Image (cartoon, rainbow, N blue to C red; front, side, top):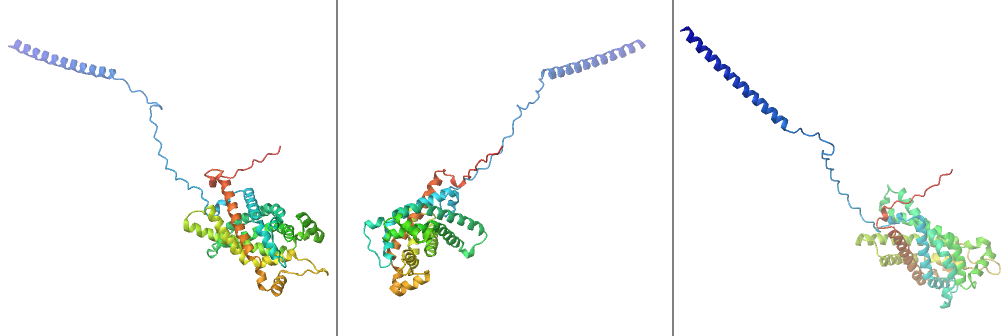
Length: 369
């Protein structure tokens, strides 16, 4: 009986050992399968800078389209250089005075003491000094006018002057322009008007006559009267033109056309001519007066001339030559303003559509060795 029990125990232990071996073999097989799978899988490559996607740049905000350059107002003239303004003014004055010289001759001959009949041949008298003095006078006038206007706008940038600032600036700058032009205008008139009034046969004789009578100072006789006539007339004509131009732009919301500019200039110049006719008569009398046998001149001053003409010939004599003057100075202002602005616009348009944003070229300074 003891032997049988030992055999049963040995069989049980053998079965348990076989089970343990089987489990061990299964575990080893499973572990080997895991290793095979791990070795079969490829290792991932390291990421390079090329493989990394670059972040997309943020879209730039769309730039606003710049407003096109405009010729409204008068700010566009600041884009012109001083030389361009001078050439524009010189050409404008040459065109206007040469075209209207016959009317100027008729006016001068009518305002002369006693009046003079004018023929077609007389209309060309004094044309040479007229053309010779027109360009430098125009250049000086518009250079002084534009530069003073720009300076006054900067000085009064923080002031409104009760809404009258543009008109005050226009009057002051136009007056300064007329003063600058008088440096040429007065000698020009002293040569031109005596020829127009048949006091000298030609402009060379007029130059010699002025030199003989008063030397170089003889060319500036009537300077005060000329300033009293030209300064207010220029101030008023520029003032009227600027006011009419501002009204036109406010109504139409556009810059005036060439035809509109001429019309506005003609109205402004004509109104100023009517107002200043008495002073023009006095200026003409002072420039054309001749001393009597005792060497005494009939007119000694502006006030005395006004009073003497009104007393001797009646108050209406102070308005002599009104129609020729209006017919001369109205178109004179029209042509001058229109040509000056048109020449300036053409100069700027040749610089391209963005002329108002173009920066002025700086001159390269050569370094001294």
